[in-house]
Image 1 (tube, rainbow, N blue to C red):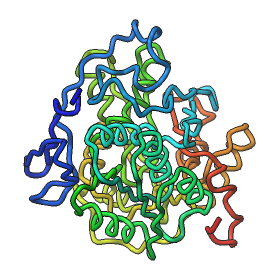
Image 2: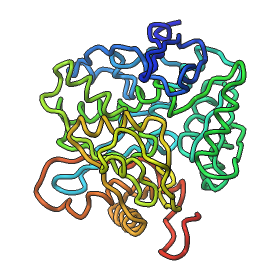
Image 3: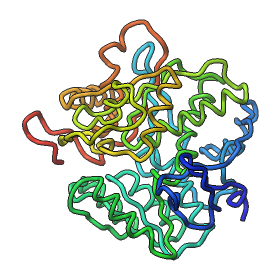
Image 4: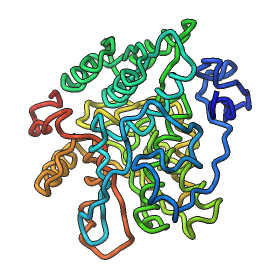
Amino acid sequence: MLAVMTAMYVCPADGTRSPVDSLAWCCPVCRGPWDLDFEASPVPLKSLSSRADSLWRYEEALPLSAPVTTLGEGRTPLVPLTSSVSAKLDFLMPTLSFKDRGAVMLAELARRLGPERVIADSSGNAGTAIAAYCARAGLPCTVYVPEATSPKKTEQIRAHGARLERVPGDREATARAARAAADEPGTFYASHVHNPYFPHGTKTYVYELWEDLGGRLPETVVVPVGNGTLLLGAALAIAELSDHGLIDERPALIAVQAEAVSPLAAAFRAGAEELGAPAESAPTLAEGIAIPNPPRARQILRAVRASGGTFRTVTEDQLRAAQLDLASRGLFVESTAAACWAAVRDEAGRAGPSVVVPLCGAGAKTGLAPAAGAGVAD
């Protein structure tokens, strides 16, 4: 079945393996997320100009090829914010968020496997992307979301024809409900957290930086982190480019969390390899990264440390200010997408290393953040 069967799921914790067509969404031994046993080949920089203007141009590095389910995703602009900081405009994707990079991989995989149903869980953007690409692939789709998800995001999910399941409680409750449904026979769980095809899609973010910068990468790559899908994809691409001798230096990864929900930042500062006891989480404007217990926490912490990077946290006031500042520069993004700019903008005018921040979701998805004291509801 094309490239689908050349890769295998493998558990990074205990080495358990499973064929991709088994529809097993997690390791049956430890119930942890899968990695993918897949070896990328070098991408020839000089030949890229003649290829399709989408993320599928990096075909040597992707575990799927010859896609049917595509909306032309990828190849988003890289624009300067200051002399040292540039922004990659991933909010210009077909569903207005970077999640399209991974969603197209999951939908294309599902199309080839032909399940009875596809389900996903999300705080909004991943669910929207899965809904859109399942619509493109002609697959029935159900998306589980927390009851407080932005109405604009849930409307977008419904518009693509997906069934919407609102779950009382927080993001963790939503994930539990989806995982229970994922165990039903004939179900493909399009999990952007558990399925490793997703980070193999998000890694194209870094391949695009490498191409746009003429075969190099910035000294620092800043990414927002909730479940870590963009960070882990970035780390994967950096490792591949380095192993293939296509970059001379590996950039440092700076991971950004909202101060209100920052379990990974706390573990990093404590020198821990795992998350500690669950801390009290507060409401945050950065709903897209408000993940109190990310399943790939160990991998995220390891990737940041291996890069020589660090974690930063941002306050609600910093998120509001960064969203308004970006809008004043012509870039209207949702408050989650402003987190990385919030983390670096106070030092952005100084001479220093080259930095790229992603603008991951469009402001049309949530609107402007409410003023301080007005709450975090849309």
